[in-house]
Length: 173
Image 1 (cartoon, one colour):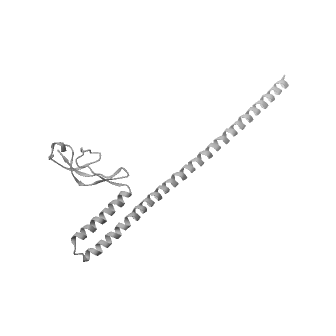
Image 2 (tube, rainbow, N blue to C red):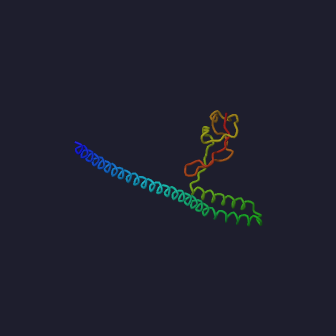
Image 3 (tube, helix red, strand yellow):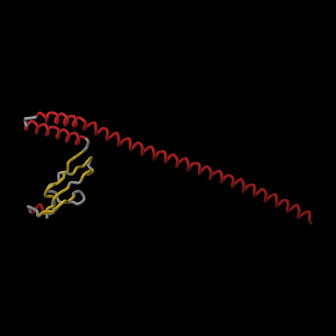
């Protein structure tokens, strides 16, 4: 009877040992899967950080290149101003001087328009605090100018349809 119990205990121990071994191998498999998932996560995180840094650098380079292109477009206007200043020293014909200034101004304006700059014409428009900056209010000279822009103190500009400087205006009351 004792031998039977001893054999039964040995069989139970063998079964327990086999179950523990199955559990251990299952734990090993799960541990390996966790390590693989962690490794994959770290690689993805690292790839994302590299992507983020690279795109930030590219954005800065693109901005610098755009600024350089704009400067290159304006340089001929600077040359015209330098020539105008030189000729201004000996100028006696005021009409020619005025024409020269107008020519240089128009060249600068065309150059900036070529870069996407547009002047905002707001005189007579209904005052909108989202796009106009009121510097003062005056009684409206005409009934239709009540609540509208009566005068522009400083022009506003858009660059590629985005306001870069809001117009400073006088509002009619």
